[in-house]
Structures are given as structure tokens and as C-alpha cells.
Image 1 (spheres, rainbow, N blue to C red):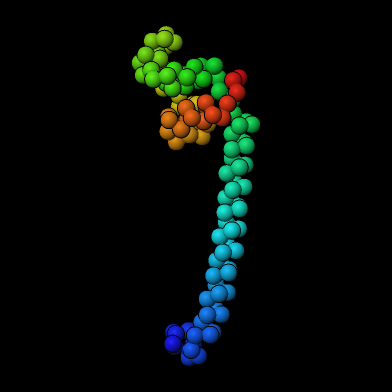
Image 2 (cartoon, rainbow, N blue to C red):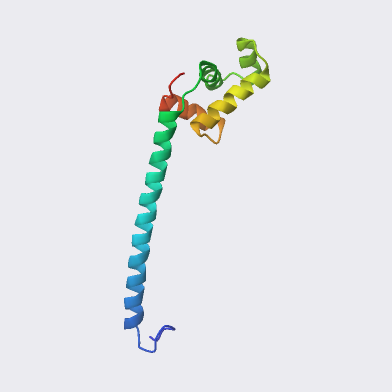
Length: 114
């Protein structure tokens, strides 16, 4: 079989292919190791540097128990906008893209109170 990389049947292409695949696997392993380090550092920084205030933690706990923002606002005797503000701060501090992931990170991650 003649390939487009050489006029010599098969052998040079096979050697090139093996070298290329070896390089790809090394690059892939290196990339995964670097990403693992970045994620570990981000998690470490999140747990070390950020703490939730009492209000933020209360809002997250009530949200986790199934209360709506309006009910949380009524319990706290504040406006719904204030509850939204506390939840937004908690999401930023936990680096969570959604409220559900924020709840999981607070419950599982054990973020400290200030």
C-alpha cells in the first residue's frame, strides 16, 4: 500500500504514525495533569478564602429546604431583592454557575461562616 506521505510502501508512514500517536498521548497526559492542578488550586482557594455570612448561609439553607425567594424574604423581614443579593453573593463566593450547584457546594463543601 502506498500512502500520500512517501513512495515507500507502509513502513515510513507506520513509523511516523507511531511517533505522532506517542506525542499526542504525551500532550494529552500533560494537558490533563495541568487541568487537574488548576482545578485543585481553584477548589483550594475557594475553600480557603471565601466564607459565607450568616445571612447568605440562611438564604441558601432556606432555598435548599424548598422555600421560594418571597417566602425567604418574609421570614427574614427583608425585601426579595435583598434575598436575591445574598444568594448572588453566595453563588459568587462558591463559584457556582447555578443555584442548585451552589446548594450542593455549600452543603457538601462546608463553607465556613464569617
